[in-house]
Image (cartoon, rainbow, N blue to C red):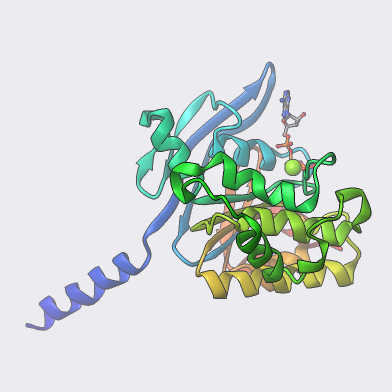
Length: 260
Ligand SMILES: Nc1ncnc2c1ncn2[C@@H]1O[C@H](COP(=O)(O)OP(=O)(O)OP(=O)(O)O)[C@@H](O)[C@H]1O
Ligand SMILES: [Mg+2]
């Protein structure tokens, strides 16, 4: 009786931690530059997972392989239980619409207004949202969630760095993704604006119950937002744990991350 009860609780635990993203044994080289050498990662539902690695360690390469912008040499990648390699274009597109991607450095289209930038994913993913004839309510809602409704008709050049990052976040949110990937969400921002962006990420996580993979080399960002961290060193998931666990590690490569 007792044993059966225990099993049920265990099963519930496993179910509660559905795997949203999985990377197994990922390899990617550019000629002699072996960037990823067997990298592994699991992102569980509702969590904030931070991947830290020094500049050039392969963080962006990893995330690009994850979303199919780059072809890995070897490895298994699955999104919500579906291995991306096995999917046809249509299914892959549908899956992509469940993933919001905040590119390193915002990557807004400079020749388009804020509104047009946000309309882009709506037009690209009609299989999810249908053909939206009146985009304004959706655009406004996404902009309101980042506190920038008033910028709808501005050009990116008219925005500050922090505002651009917020607009890019609104664009990543407009399709109501289940997973958000952030590539260096605070880089290039002053400390106060960086803090605002982090607050916004936490707010969005709560409001939309998203799972987030956050790539950063900003230790403060990692401390505030991470529930779990992975350190990417030498192309592998070198160390994993909570911020507290990693900051007290005696491993010299791990210590190097937290030295100011
Ligand atoms: N398209 C490419 N062709 C050739 N080499 C590439 C390409 N993209 C990335 N690399 C190389 O892969 C390595 C990892 O690059 P990546 O952009 O993933 O670093 P990163 O960890 O994101 O760094 P940062 O913190 O500066 O953003 C670098 O040595 C880079 O030169
Ligand atoms: Mg990068």
